[in-house]
Image 1: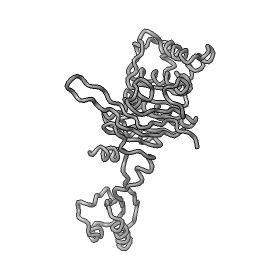
Image 2 (image 1 turned 60 degrees about the vertical axis):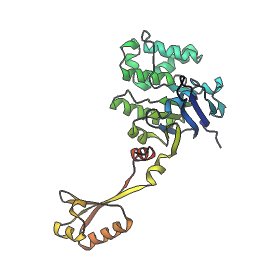
Image 3 (image 1 turned 90 degrees about the vertical axis):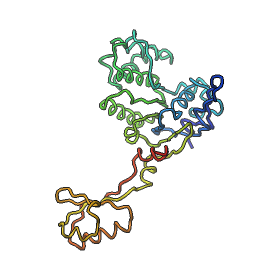
Image 4 (image 1 turned 135 degrees about the horizontal axis):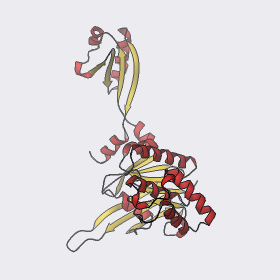
Length: 307
């Protein structure tokens, strides 16, 4: 069995406090594994501990307790970090370099030779849609362009694991769509992606698994499909029937929605669904669709946060 791409074991981070104040526990005994080749969405409200967890993974912070492994190697090892690309939540980049110069500087940190650097820089700029602005000063970039450049530097070493903190926060709808496509393209190449996000709809589109964190603790984790399909909120039946026969179904008027010739009723009990379908057919109605209404990622998120 392959080792996890990321293993977080009993991770705890407590910040010391000023005199007279209590220490703050930002991450509380967090246990999490991310499998190789999957897209993992790390979700939670502001202050939940997402960024602290990611900074600890990237050795920007040191844990109070616990440890992190990258592909089975402790993250304190330089060898482990060579296989990682990282995009911080708000990348701060020196504005008097061009985008190409910044990526060349980043590539040199990984000791890439001249020809490899040139190819990787062009490839990464093309991937993030910045090739036409590569030779402009970074101080003239928009926030969205800065985010794209930050992603390009995270890709420069062709990492096996990408760790992205709120990567879509500064992108417009077109940029978010392009970013989602890029994540799926990287997944197809066998890369592992771990990202945090507030944009639940984007996470729902691309994540294989999700973890929901609140007040520093992991409150739910699992395959997105299993979490969503495990609970059906209701079933909607759309049918065609004359108003006089519809009245014989015995539903209150407020429970039936009429759209042109179509009638829609929402039911929560399986027995009611079977009975209603039988009644519609007995009264010469025509069933158009029977659609289960599943929980969305937002429903799961709000439930776990007690909202």
